[in-house]
Image 1 (cartoon, rainbow over the protein chains, first blue to last red):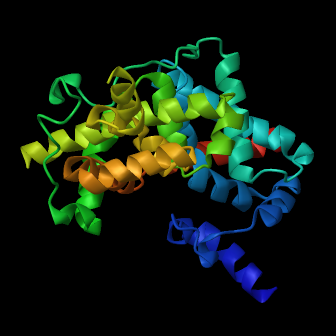
Image 2: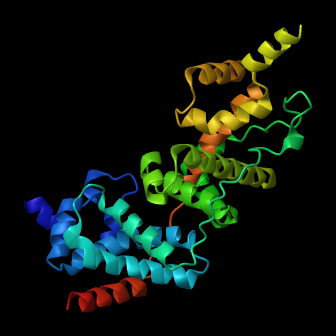
Amino acid sequence: MVSSVESYASWSIRPRAYRSPLGIRCGTVEDAELVTRLRSGDEDAFRYLVDRYHCSLLRLAQTMVPTRAVAEEVVQDTWLGLVRGIHRFEGRSSLRTWLFHVLVNRARSTGVSERRPTIGTGPAVDPDRFGPDGGWVDPPVPWPDEVDDRLTAIQLAERIRPRIAELPAMQRQVVTLRDIEGLSAEEVCDLLGLTEGNQRVLLHRGRSRLRGMLENEMGKA
Amino acid sequence: MRLFRLRRRRSELVCREAVELVTDYLEGALSDADRTRLEGHLAACPHCTEYLAQMRRTLAVVGRIEPETLDPLVQDELVALYRRWQT
């Protein structure tokens, strides 16, 4: 119990140090513990959750509503939803997934969400790069090994980040949730109300576009 | 002759088709037959092998995209709201 008190005491002092993208044990405060604390109105637990998820929620909201201002409202509404609904949280999903669900519902209820049913088609690669026999005439040029370096990958990620906005809304939603947030295919289907097949098509289009963007970045280097 | 060509087209992938199977392949969503066809194609095609490698590296890069940093003022505002919501 001592360790739990220690980690709890540390949130308010330096919550960022406890942020762990890999979910290392010391960085993860258990959902069950957070839920208990939120139910008793614990401000530090709320602050911790905001620190951990606010920007992810905002990022997802921005794929669902047309403006940043509306997205910010939707996220604030989501936090209110958490406060009002935490007593009903049953722990069937993670707290994060539950927050995403609240957010998606709020975004859709604004009535301005970009929810076009079109999945979109189109080739993964510019058809001009293949010959009449379907083989490459302009094949992908191998990328330098540095792409695998952590620092280079981080730099490339920074360059690609603003360009995610160029993807059509639903591709952006699926790619953001799957490849950036790391949700499972099943969670994403459930969250966005997609069939497995449609989820994969959106993922495929989105990922193909992102590969193309990176290919361009390599060309510039 | 025509039958032969049809059968050949069914069993052999061309590059243009192979790149469309990459996501299903990585997702483990291909049928055994399609997976075998794709792997057969990859074994013989360095360009599509490179394409698949690039897709894997793309995912590694995209996975490093961080959300923007939380503005401490926004956090304080939300905590203040939290206090109000509690009452």
